[in-house]
Image (cartoon, rainbow, N blue to C red):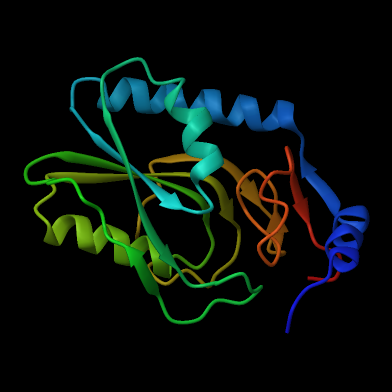
Length: 185
């Protein structure tokens, strides 16, 4: 089923604004403060989880005040839909992370299936340690691995379908400068 521009525009018009650009900037400043403190001497590889973390990673790494390598990986469960399914690895990380620190930057920690698979992959590839940075941590009890630690969290979020600042609604509105919740979802 394809989506129409009318539907996409209506979703934005009806959506609830949860976080403004100013609130996002404060959250990213706080995340960067912790990352600068913890990883400045670690020579980390920073993995941006595509496509959702593209916007966050771009904003976040400019706040980091130490040398680092940036790369990406692409693992998804949503495929431009509003419900997740099996994990689909579209691009594996390319860097050798043997005995290196890895910082995974993702847009959202919802149920955590994608993040858990990425963390496992990094450790299996020989990473010394893996840290997780997410812009939004959804507040609910459906985490795949409740014990998995998010080291750098920007914002807590209600359990609704959200989009903006990298997160999409059916492939659209990643470019919205705030974070919005879809009405009725």
